[in-house]
Image (cartoon, rainbow, N blue to C red; front, side):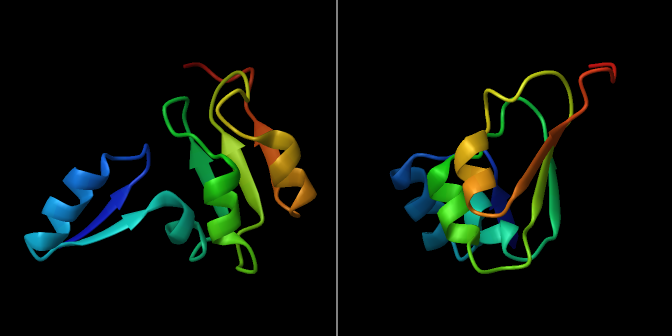
Amino acid sequence: MRILVTDGMDKGAIEKVRAMGHELVELGKALRDFDVAIIRSKTKLRAKQIDEAKGSRFKCVIRAGVGLDNIDVQYAKDNGIEVKNTPKSPS
């Protein structure tokens, strides 16, 4: 089974899932396979995840909803990733 973790996970839990024979992919590495990611408030896009996506096709993150506090906006922009949100959309 292939599992994507979007909000982080305890390292011990990650090891247990992998020991059970599952492939676990964390958000940063998964971003490499996409041009755009649409995220909500729980998913954090920080420097670590952005660094893992560097040099890939990933070029834009859209925050579905109001606010951008879960995204390291300046770091993303500094690394060529466009940041958008949808402040007028319903929650």
